[in-house]
Image (cartoon, rainbow, N blue to C red; front, side, top):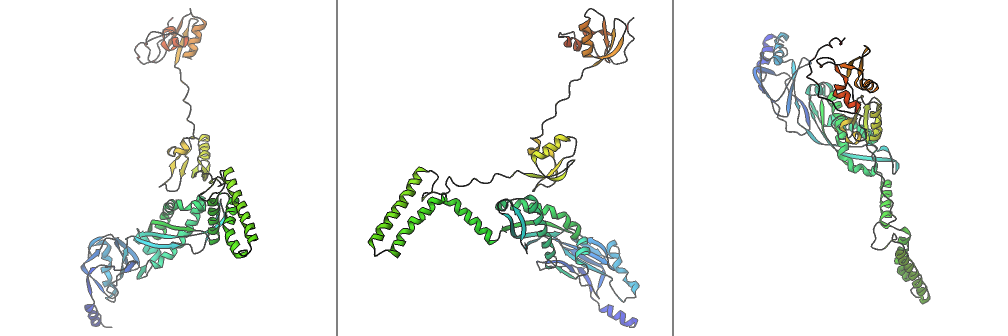
Amino acid sequence: MGLWDTLSQHAKAQFLDVLQWLDDTKNTLVYRFPVHNQAIQDGGKLVVREGQAAVFVAEGKLSDVFAPGSYELSTRTKAISGFFQSIKYGLNAPYKGDVYFVSTRQFTDQKWGTANPIMMRDADFGVVRIRAFGVFAYRITDPAVFLREVVGTAGLFTTDEINAQLKRKLVSALADTIGETKIPVLDLVAHYMDLGDAMRQRLTGWFQENYGITLTDFVIENISVPPEVEQMIDKRSQMGAAGNLDAYAKFQMANALPDAMKAQGASNPFMQAGMGLAMGNVVGQTIGQAAASPGTFTPNQGIGAGTPPPPPPLETRYHYAGPAGQGQYTAKEIAAFVVQNRDGAHNLWANGWPGWKPWKEVGEVASLVPPLAPPPPTTAIYHYHGLDGATAQLPAVEVANRLRSDPNGRHLVWKEGMAGWVEAKTVPEITMLLGGGGPPPPPPPSGFPPPPPR
């Protein structure tokens, strides 16, 4: 191809004044602007709308990311100037780069569910299989990482192409979370919100690092058990509602006798009389037992005295990290760790907390740790000079002992703050130890002790 033909082709190329993306779909994550065989005009404009980001890739290398706003496309723009250096290729390619528009809005109502049942160990039913489903939401918070790690060179990337991978990661993390919390199956419905918050906190950092996206919401709509377990739960509820099962069975038998009489012995008066007597005995026994035993079944009775008590409340277990290692422990166990090592960093975490807390901020644990005993009172040290000329440094209590053993002797003391040597019996602190009061101390000048009197 001659130079003239090359110039003719480029003269016919569409010079783009404005680069922008008007998205009318609800599931497009990344759109590559069609710049192949087109030229970007120097002095044009890049328009990035709210909920979008623009990523420039120059010759296969990510150049820059543009937030919402308007930008001039010229050689004066540092991130764009490389695109206008294609002249060195002899005009064979007017543009040596790509422009990707990335949607940064929140993608909501993304469905998730367990493809296979999750096995868990339950306190009421033993090993049981559960299924769960719900919705989640996310948004791209690091377009560069998302483009580099997920999209690659695709010109159009939608939610369908990444949701399958996200769902597998979510279901795997949910199985771990439920297993770690050890919440009974019958109590899971009361912890949907807590489990959702724990899932969001658990996976957001991983998603940001590996995909450049943030998990903004995770909702559990339902957790179910197999049909046979549901039937077992229904039967248990029926047994609780029936109260005294023996009285209930007799009452059902009494209700069935009239139908049996019609079906089998309607023409035999003796059989009718026998069944009537039997029915009377059954009803009479049932009523008599009901009167004698307040916990027996009556037609208007709900759950009777024979209903088993509910399971005791579960003791809260906290995630613990500290000198005793890592694991899940009760408040009482963690309090014991603190007592053994009060200077250690004992940190706790529970579902729904934004982060780890020191043990002093968790009331249930702090209330179980006994306070430290106050330090013993300290007594002042005095320079002591006795009548025999002996000098020493003694605490106030020892000086008081020497006064007590020789009340008429000469006992001089001095400590920093005193103007000079004084009689020990005039020092209030010492006289208090002897059981008496004393005059107030003199003003406290500081300095070294004067020489003892001769």
